[in-house]
Image (cartoon, rainbow, N blue to C red; front, side, top):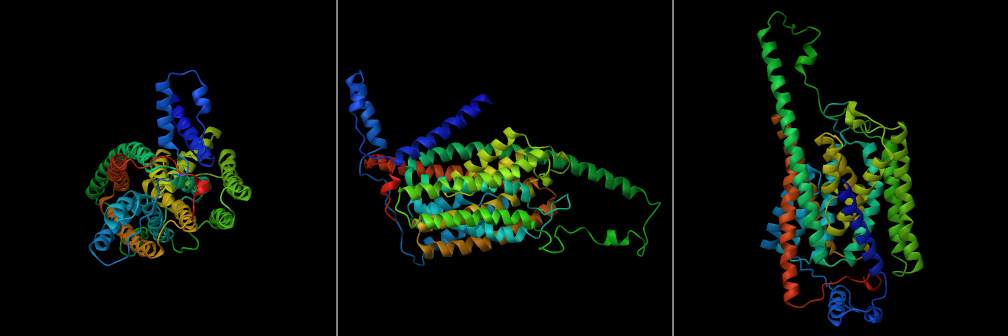
Length: 469
C-alpha cells in the first residue's frame, strides 16, 4: 500500500513540476550546471537531456486537419466510431481509446486534434446514454440507476481535473502521453477483468440457487392461484426496470448542484479566453476553479461523513465515509479528469473500476460514470473549442454518429443482460475496451515516437505562454 501511495505522489509531483516548467521562460541557463564540480561528460549528458526536453522557441506540435471529403476513410472511420461509441457507452468508458486511433490512423488527424474530436464524440455518446438512463431504476433498489450522491462527490473534482488535463494536453509531448497511457490502461483493464470474473462467479451461484428454488416450486402443486386471485396481477406482470415518470426519477437538488458547477466552470473558461495567456487574470480565473469544485465536493463529502447523506446504490452496505476515503475519492476523481483532458478519453476508464471497487452494481457504476462524463466531456469540448483545437464540421459529424450509436448500444446490451441474467457482461465490456485501447493507442504512440526520433524532431515540452490560438 505504501509503494502505491509513493507512486501516486511521485506522479502528482511530476505533473506539478511539468506545469511549472511549462509556464517559465525557455531561456534556460546552464551556467549553474557547469559551475557544479562534475565531470565534463556528465555535464554534456545533462545538457543533452535538458535540450531534448526543453528548447527555446521550439515546439513539437503542428496540427494536421485533412479536408472533409466522402471516401473510404470517412466510411471506415464512421463504422469504427459507431461500434466504439456503442460498446464504450455500455461500459461507461466513453470509447475514447477507440476514437483516437481511428481519427489518427484512418482519418489522418494529428494526435492532439484527435484527442479534441474524441472528446466531442464522448460528449455525444454520453448525452444520449444519460437520456436513456434517466428513466431507468436501480436493478434491486427503489431508486434511479444513476447514483446522484456518488456523482456529486466525484463530478466537481472531475471537472477540475479536466481543466488541468487540457492544459497538460497543450504542454506535454506525445511520447510522455503514450507512456502514461500504456501504464494506466494495462493496470485498469487487468483490475476490471478480475472484478468481472468475481462478479461472474457470484452470478453463477445466484443462478444455481434460483434454479433449485424453481425446481422446488414446480414439485409443489398444492396451491395454484386462480386467474382472478390476489396474486394474479403479480404473476401476469413482471416488475419493470423503468420509472413511471422521468421527472420523479431525477434528484433535482443534486442535479442542480452539478449544473451549478458546470455553469461556473463555463463562465470562468469563457472569461479566461478574453485574457492574455499567462497574464495575472488568466491565472486568477484558472485558480478560481479550485474553490468551486472543492466547495461542492466538501459539501457532499461532509454529509457522507456525518451520515446526513448516503451512497444509496450500495444498499445495506452503508457506512459513514471516512476522511481518508474522501481524499482518495477526490484524488481519483481529479486524476480521471486529468487523464480525460490530457488523452481525450472518458474519465470512466478510472471511475468505472473505482465504483466497482466501492461495491456499486455494474449497471449503476456504468450509468453514474457516464452521467459524470456528460458534464466533464462537454466542458472539455468548450475548452478545446476556445483553444481552436478541432475543425467544427468533422467534430459535429462524428458527435452525431456517437450519439445514435450509444442509444443503439444501450438498447441491445440491456436486452442481452435481461436475457442472460448477467450484469458482469458490462464489466467484461469495460475491461475489453480498456485493453484494446491500451494496445491501439500504445501502438500508435510508439510508431510515432520512432518516426520522430528518426527525423530528429523536437520531442520536448511546449510552452503554454507561447501557445498561439
